[in-house]
Image: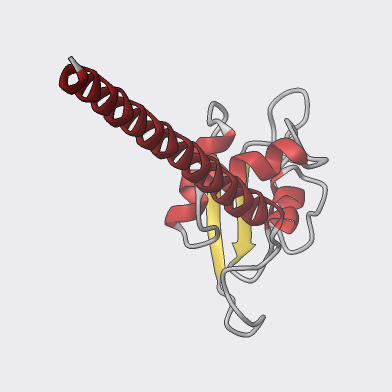
Length: 147
């Protein structure tokens, strides 16, 4: 009978130890997930508020022509800017536009942007608030003839 009691006690100790180890592993996984999520959120936030142009110097910057179409979303415009080498990631551009004073103000048209410009400068140009160095759009009067 004493032998049977020792076996059940040993079994309970082993199960209790296994439960404790499993609990410790779960806590460790939760902590690692929180650290990973925090690191990812910090990196994303840093890129959103970072004002580093793609070209390191103004002399190294290149002018690039960008065409914004009427029905393009901000993310699609970001994809175009990424293809042209003006920004690093479209999702970052999308978030920067959402948080800027230029939210919802991007106008369709043809623009000349530079790889040394930061996103805030590009948004000012794309919204029509900074027209310096931009091609002049031809205007027409009410009858459709060019002025």
